[in-house]
Length: 430
Image (cartoon, rainbow, N blue to C red; front, top):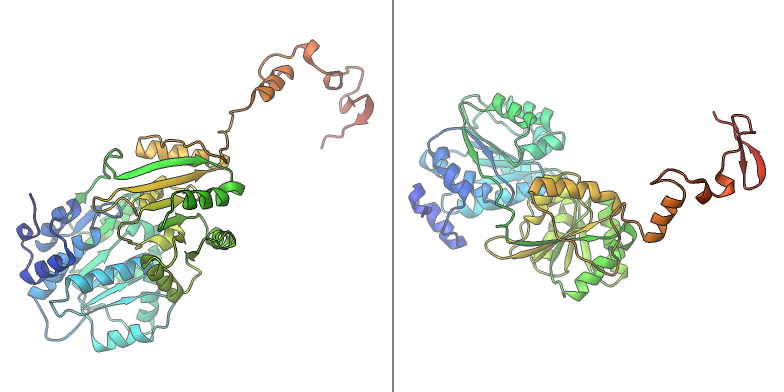
């Protein structure tokens, strides 16, 4: 069995891991840590919740601690797509490296840059940043990346999806070419592979395939329900199952705000986090949710990056995601660390195609639950509708004896004229 001790990590880092209660490395950690310690570049493909942050943070802390400088200069740069993920990474570096004396700071937009520039002036070894704010500070002359030895791109696929490609290229152009680069993504698309090939030198490919869908400790289900009834169904399930803590995903920021307002009107406390919320509001909402001051946190996919809540019992897909891999990211927020979780999806008739994409992606159909607000799948018509289709010739050839007079074609009329309900009407076709 692989242990952290067998990965040749230093006693300082092993002590910090012991304090966190980490005893056994995950698959991505066991594969990545030796490669990073050997000085090689990495192209890693791993899903959210696999322990990816520790896979690069632990070996980088050790490499920097083994070759310390007398002054603090930026030696490691980590780029992340969202503020939440950047904050989570910074917290991990602090926890794992608290015995090393290495200094780190986190840079992101939506807040005053004063503290961030003050930290940089005092000197830091590690910068974790979102691309937009980092580029702003670089343009202002606050950040010098000429001393960077280690470059990490975390969730690179998401950064490309968010349109950061040009910012990333500008930032990397200021980083020395003689560096070690660690490149991580969830989905290695052709665009991602092209970007990676331009940044990496003879990389080691580390791939951690998603766990077999049968092995994931998440009990999944889908409720067919139209949009107008989704709010009522959510309230019903929260009360019926006495849910104390759940993460609810919506497709849009506006939808998240509307849902929070609707829940408040029904007596259920909830808060939303998305890109239009200030960073202070987002951090307070997440902290209050973790301390269980309210039961439901409503989030968009982008804002949810970096949310890590221990023993989260439920995840609701209030809207079916546009991308099938986003579904896996969403439900991966529960069922962690050997603790089972529940993922419930609400699917309207207009979202059935997205649900089929998820079934193809995961290789498994999600069980459908009948309920009070149940809506029938598209095409599942009642007997009356089926008989009408037969009568009016939609499924069979027209039979004149089943065709009402008002639908019979009167050939005595010229083209462009029809007889309807006993009255003559001219129809002009444009």
